[in-house]
Image (cartoon, rainbow over all chains, first blue to last red; front, side, top):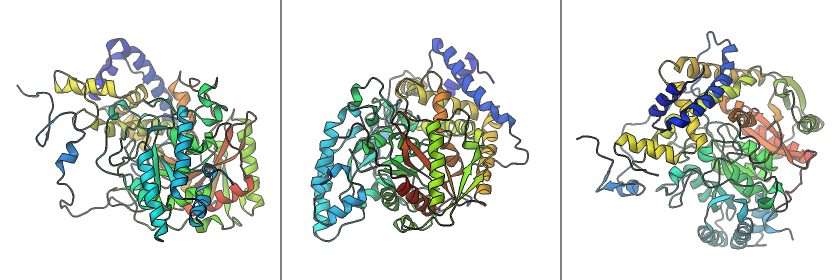
Length: 95
Length: 493
């Protein structure tokens, strides 16, 4: 399926990646090319085939729901672009 | 005496044990080599001081009779493995200044085994690429480009995404290096640069602390200059880790025992679908010769079929971007990494992510977002997952009539930078022979078997059953002895 400029703008917003309007056209044709190529999957009959999400047959392990790690907020904050006390800070979201 | 940088890991361990040289001397030789080869850009961050410190500690352990499995061996670490206190970038501007407060499980295991870390090797940004060309810190250049690679007219790619690791190992800057393989990122660069690369079974090595690309496909593995060196490294890197929910709790065999086993009676499958039209003639010839070598060593060669092979790449280019788009959602400028300014929170996210991610990464996030979005999920993502099962079933069926599969690792040899950049799909085709294993979760080992007419390395790939790396090592070792590849690149440090 060909992707148009409007769709590029929509998915770019969903992905929180800014794509200037002037570039949306070329991105649209690039993505359309890739999607046209993956569409050869339509040739494959997948009737009755279950999706494979993980190659590990066994179900994921469970562990006791207890806190067994943590207590080093200052380490965690070391790479933060902005922080105050023991919090990450972001631009104002509520007026 | 052989130059210290030319030794294999196995030879170096013998030399260290026999006190022919010290770990400090071995490390200094490699640091000098890195100095000489800096124009190859194999490393994003060099850590010579840390390496000297570790080498000194290694000598002390050996003197005390407490030497470990890889004690004193200088290695490169792909800059996708988080290393405590050492900058880890994933070759992305968005992580340019990220210094992890923790260590990945696999790099910790390598450190615990006494190895010495020379530095963080370059890669395609977030491991997305097959040439090393998408690195935000400039690409690594293959030592096969010429006697002076950085000045060569055609600067050849060292493969990708583990491009700095393949460059460092083939140019003799490191005895071995770590890689990660999501669609071929260990095996393709190994093949292109004439070294050995091993992608273990999914779940064999912990993914904890390795920056995620596509979580259901990513797997860590070793790169080195001999099959036994990769076996030595994998033995250390592998093992259950409760911090990775997909890590599998089974024992790790001593792979060294597998290296000397005979291949007598082993059934080697040749998949007919891998014989592509327009395939490199030298690759095809060496494939036939490799099969003959294994037959001469006592193996039985059988034809097999993997009918869904041609659909593996399209499946991969739906599943990998889908997983990447959610994994990379964490780079939002809040907790770590780059932050650009914006009036609102959304504006800050958008500015940060468009400044911080390179073109190929953005492209894959957009594709992933699209195939997961409402209305397209079933048509693309579900469909790809269903074909993924058919690809896995092909292998399960094939392994009823053979024990290992032999196939080329790449359709051609190294190309030059700028030669496959016009159409993204052309670059994606580099992984046509490697990506199938990631989708099926199987182990694969690539080793060099000869040179093309132009004098560039060609690698063969052996594919095994899940968690049967031992049989792979047995077959690879037999092929390595028969092929006796001893070519060195025109440049070595």
